[in-house]
Image 1 (tube, each protein chain N blue to C red):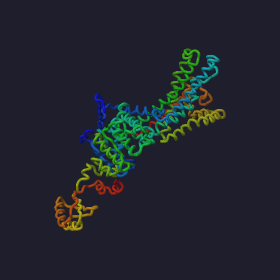
Image 2: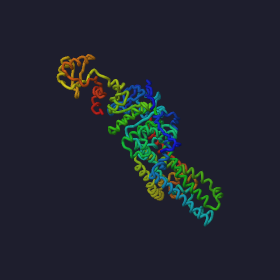
Image 3: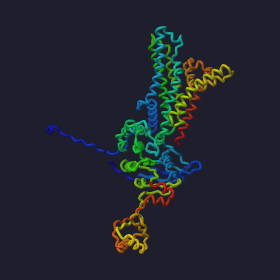
Image 4: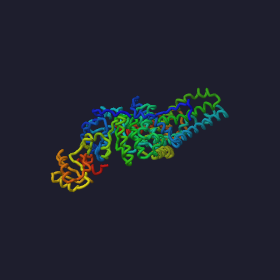
Length: 316
Length: 310
């Protein structure tokens, strides 16, 4: 297995005061971004500007104002830089009458690889994507999961520095989705290729990405490491085997806010002293302790606070 | 039990994992050439299923068969009547071939050209091309060049078969070549003219739809149905109405436009255009009309794809 690539701090993608208007519709408004190596998730509801950002970085759209650079180059002025980028679109993009091996060889050549190298890369990439056995079958007969794998493989066949994945788990069943997320993680951790992952499924992003950028209405609302957003909170989760009501009373007498959370209790304290208060209350209520853990924030909670509509439709 | 002299070897397959690509990257020219090569393969069904090969090779076969029949008839006439008999009897030769076969060549273009543009847009594959080191202009020029190559092949091969047949059919091959050597540059130039016209018009129409069948049916209608309609109307107008109305209607016979140019290249009027009133127009107008019908659709086709990338 190859060593994971060392994290670098310089940005692979940079957006400065980036705006994109379609007549009266503002798709992006003064967006500033710096995306470094690793797996970065772009989250947002439909129409938030995710696809517009990706298309500007790929050179398919010209920004109304501001600048977007990829690997230090303006991609719409220098098409050669696209040889180092990969793109997996959300929608169908595969011809039905050719085999995956032939299609990937062709795509590698279109990315600038000589034919003999393109053939080797196509076979290797399909093996890594888990499609080695089926590579000579016409793609018209592939399942949705297999097509998604070919779409990812064609984005990787020329060994890009960065790959853009637009909703890579769309249309997949739970097992297929897990496999695809594994492949996405492998793409960076084993292959050393950075990933920009656009999704409206927060759980996918939370489990796969190192960093997130939250877009809403063409604005960047939040961005940062996923760990930061899912960090420990001052709330403690506790489960007891008996005397639950006595424990709630004992805690409330000590001025602690207690709420029911499934089988357990969420205890919100002012600071670290909540653990001392809990210990005393457990002793007083004679409640046998089964589980006690600091509660972690989930990305969904973050969006419930910051974007009402988004959380409603977007939680996967 | 194994023989004491027999050694057993155990092989192990190592997974060396993902390997970074460190070879050459040949950039935009390689990308253009890859799209061109893929276009040629698609148009001829090379590397595709047997079904994909049937139509293109059937048309090529029929076009070659027409040339072969022309060569056999000319050869037999030379042998049994005399060396100058084909010309004295007015048997069709190189200058007449495109007039006779133009409809088949246009139907081939109508079926083949949409194959190069429509599926890429219908399947969304165009999005994968345009995020690589390739612009919309690069893509459409490579596709046009691919189909132009195929059309030139389709136009030249039967003429070359006819030439070989005429050379071999006569009693004195060297004398035939000495007398008719100018036919070679003429047929090559004329073949390219008909190929450029058919390629451009067919690809322009194909750029408006994602469905191959719609483009093919429209093109066949354009080439085939306009021919009897404009021929009949033009001849009536030429006889009954004073002025150039008949000639102008005849100019809209789309399958005749490159045949008039063919006539000018060979310096003789072919069978099919001998009855077309448009043939009475001066050469500059016929050539200008040909370029108008080639350059304008070509420019519009290029403009449609150029705007796909900023």
